Amino acid sequence: MTLDEETAKNFFEQILNLWVIPEIDKRRKKNNLPIDFAIDKIQIIISPDESSPIVRLNKEIKAEITCELEPGISKQVTGEPVYWKEVKDILDIKLSDIDDPDAAHITMILFRKGWKIKFDLRQNKRKAKERYDAAKEFLNLAKKALEEGNLRAFTDILFSAVELFVTSQLFVISEQEYVKKATHSWTQLRYNLFINNGNYKKEYKTAFNKLSGFRDAARYFNKPFKLTTEDAKEMLQIAEDLEKFTEKMIM
Image (cartoon, rainbow, N blue to C red; front, side, top):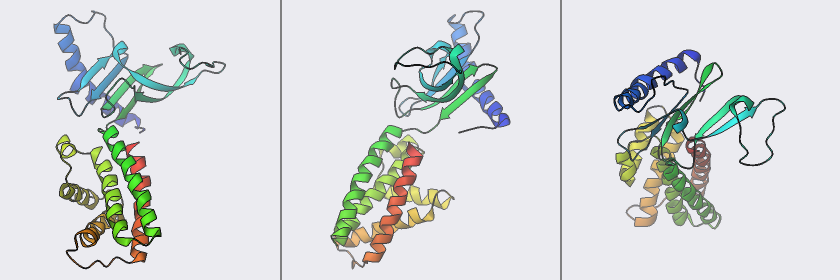
């Protein structure tokens, strides 16, 4: 995400006031910082399983950095060192494999005459990816069930796919209370509220709700099952679109 100059300045100041300055004060009280200490790198790790963020300063930060090298500089071997003087620009900053894959991060590096700010405030990305991968399996099975004309099986399987896509989306934007106990009813309620607040396509919510009703009829026989092949094809198309959107949201 790219921030304009004013927004970046305000964001930087908020990070300083909220986490960095208190961390520096704490370390100074413990005599853990040199007198001439100056900041050139900042990293905030926000893990869903931790009560407070981890604050890293300068050499403590851990990250995978994608950069553009200066003209005439090339690296032929994976793992070959790259020095700051060889870097023309920093293109991207991601958490390293050492950190919790479900953690969010804010990383800032003083580069040349300004700060490079990269952040990803989504949490539970690994858990979301697991559910997204499972949803794709169900989606493929739903396609086969529809091809064979098995509408009851199609309905049950497609509902599972759509619910997993929806859960995957909610995992990266929700508090841990939901993530730890994502029931059918809670997932449907949260997603309906989320869509009703103007997020994403209303078709996603509508298809999710319809599939829930059709599934009750298809699997539990508590009411007549009236899904037509045309309706099934339409919901499958929405589910395929939902898959693409979910991938963009969680990756």
